[in-house]
Length: 188
Image (cartoon, rainbow, N blue to C red; front, side, top):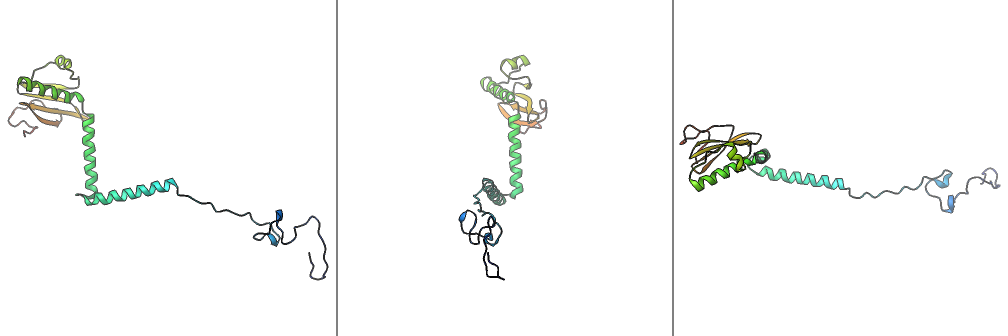
């Protein structure tokens, strides 16, 4: 080191490294040559595309596309959602209905096609042909029968009249009084 007041030199043993030489013999970096140790070099991490960001982007694009499509339909987004909800409710009602209800309908329609009349059957007779306990059959006359069973979380009644299925109505209804206008069923 050199003192500026006297132009003499001296050597310090065990002290700091001479200026211009870093630790491990490499040239100094940063502020290393100014007397303090330099900070270690930081390497910037490369960040790749993350799967979560891609997934969220795809979800947003899909949602935006669906919203645009639904807006173009009659009723807009609200109408599209309402239509979907009613469709799902109908599917749930079909799935949750007693399969024996449909089996009874097929059996009685088959008997009418073969003989021209609906049979008057007891519960033991119904069980013998595979129609379950949850289904009841009201025999109105040889030309009409009401089949009742579980459907969509409640009870449904189905009227078979003269070889025609007049459909299913929610609730438990007995044989109608007037077969020309069998309320609550409607003739087609």
